[in-house]
Length: 58
Image 1 (spheres, rainbow, N blue to C red):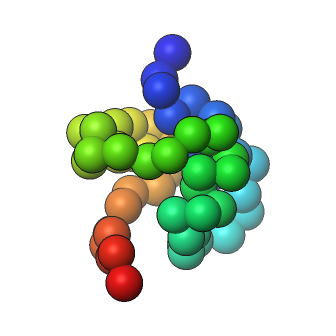
Image 2 (cartoon, rainbow, N blue to C red):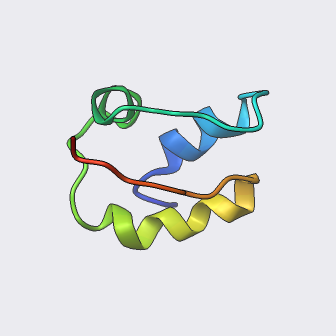
Image 3 (cartoon, one colour):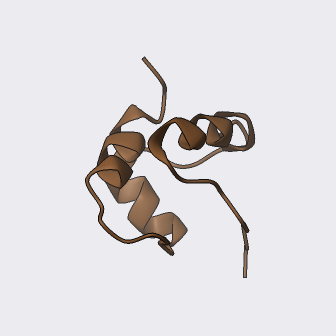
């Protein structure tokens, strides 16, 4: 099971073709702070029909 499984399940339930989520929203969904490992785990998104297009810290 993925560290970010709760996020992948959340995204799988969405109907929109594109989504914009803020760090606070993602952290609420997953229950912990996002760390640098997300850059590796984001590749799992393609299994759910999404991809990370842009990550912005601003």
